[in-house]
Length: 288
Image (cartoon, rainbow, N blue to C red):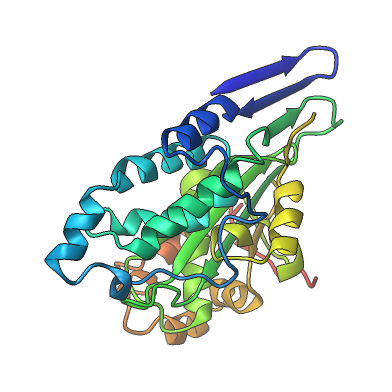
């Protein structure tokens, strides 16, 4: 990892340009045609794309899929949340990857190559340091078992400090439940929050949930403070916000999943509505 500290400008930038160069060269991709987004819009990987014959499996053993995905995970978790969605999908197939998985991994490298100098910039001269946390969910996005994706992105000074994308453990029965389960990730990272609603257009965490088009990914990369030069709100869907405020509505939306019910095991309800500091965690809805 490279850290550029500009004392005059009051900025600190973290990037991995040399590591990306080494990774692309190791796979002979240094002269490959570049792309403008990490994956095709709407791309989803499934087990149906995995090898089904011994010949296909032997062929994939000649490709360093596991080590390359490991390298991509390192890049993702350190400095590049813009590739988190596709790398999360690739990491599901470490045991039995297919040709499609390999092609997608190579495409990510072809995206990282021209953007190797992109990094996260923290600016100490913004005038204010505001903590913002965004959550989102992609309902039923795993086509193999229909589990949803939960994502959280925590920003300080218009730059991400925490970003994660993970599949939910249980199948959500509605998009509201998926959003509510995603919302429960935020209090695990910080305790003093205000829950608010932000529309899709301003949802920075969206790039962690699904494969987006070129225009959208460019907008989100810029909005998240990922450049080459130098908390206040959680964001959830309106239905999920209402679910956090109404116990009866929550019981209907979360039926069949005791973790999100009103029973003694429904700890998400208590995470969002507990009163450790005089009721600081209170969901509120802001119209966008």
